[in-house]
Image 1 (cartoon, rainbow, N blue to C red):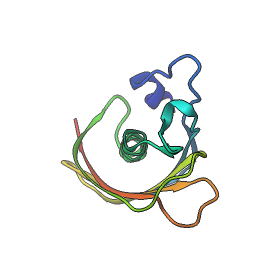
Image 2 (cartoon, rainbow, N blue to C red; image 1 turned 45 degrees about the vertical axis):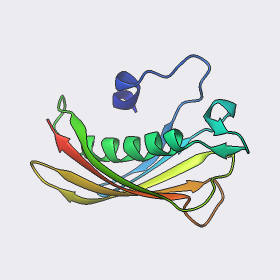
Image 3 (tube, rainbow, N blue to C red; image 1 turned 90 degrees about the vertical axis):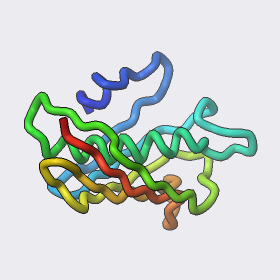
Amino acid sequence: MADLHAAFPPDDGWPTTAVEHLDATTIRMRMPVDQRRLRPGATVSGPTLFAMADSVAWLLTLAHLEPGRDAVTANVAMQFLRRPQPVDLVGEGRLLRMGSRFSVSDVLLFSDGGDDPVAQATVTYAPI
């Protein structure tokens, strides 16, 4: 989380995203959702979903790099599957490939308490 907060300092008053689980190939993160992350109709905004998917894949990639290294987004393909509810957003990432030039992660996003994903992303990062 220190890497996430160093790169993207939380705004005063904004709830912070937290890592709930991290192992060799998977990560689970939680992003509190408040009014600033909602669109009319009480649905979580697309940019919020994208930011969560990108953060999940980035931290999963960083977990496999030497300290001091970073990674940049090389590609994202995202599918919005169903309307997210105005509750915490949960991101589950799985590392599909970690190479010297690219990492590829599959990310599923859920509304907290929901069984079906609200979005899916395949995210490629280039370590630098």
